[in-house]
Structures are given as structure tokens and as C-alpha cells.
Length: 179
Image (cartoon, rainbow, N blue to C red):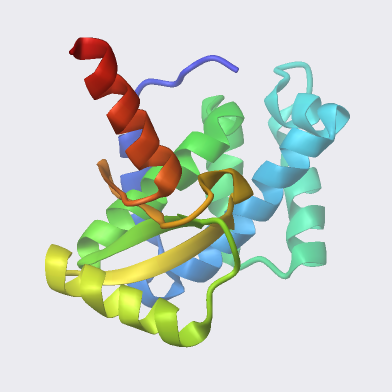
């Protein structure tokens, strides 16, 4: 898939068209279409190919919108992306919509990688600690990676906090190599 310039512009257009409290639901709906495009090559071709007319693509989007219970605004936005030839970059646009939405809401998303499942108490405590560090409300997403051996790895935006045994061993290895 080729990289589309101006993804931020398309994300801003979505955010200006949708009420702020409806953005999470809109992102969910757009993500469903993006996942469908990733899984079904014929659907992706139907959405991205200039062979199909705007009317045909519009009918497909209307049908899918009805089946998925999409809002009119999201349906119109998808039609706009098809007409502008940018529907192929939908996953990148969704990522940028999320980033801009979190920036507006003064929220951040943290990817927390642990070797085992963690409890709700620890998650709440971790969320509060990260809120104190970043000054923002934090949405946590958890990933289990047994290769960490112990500890935790947290990525908030472009900042990485790595207290995992695997990470510490990597730092030790680098120090030993450098001398």
C-alpha cells in the first residue's frame, strides 16, 4: 500500500464533521471497514479501483453502512474518501484520527506489554501513575509477551519505559560490548 500524503488533513476533516463525543464510535465504524478491506481483497479492489463508478461504490458503502449500523456522517465520509481516491489509506487515516482526538481530549494511549495477565487493581494503579507522569488521562492497552520474562514495558506516544528483564539484559549486553 502506498503512503498517502496529507493523512492529517483527512483526519481533521473527519474530526470537524463529527461531534466530539461521537468520535470513538466513528473510529470503531471506520475500523470495521478498514479490517474488511484488509481481509477481503475483492472488497478492497471494489473500494479502491477507478473501474467502479462513484454510484456503485456509494451503493456498496450504503449497504455496508446499513449492515454495520453506521452513522450518516461516517457513511458520507467513506463516500468522500472513495471519491477522492484516498480510501486505500483508511488505516493510516484512522490512526491519525485517534492521535488528534487524544490530543484534543488531553488523553494518551499507553501500550503496556507484560509477561503475564495483570489484575484490574494493578492496571488502575498503573494508569494513575502514568497520569501523574504525563499529566494526561491514559487509555491502557495490554499485550502479553512471555519473552519479557518479568517486569513491564510501557510505550506512551514516542516515549518508552522498559523495566522488563529482557530490556535490562539488553542494556547490560550493550554496556559489556562497548566496554
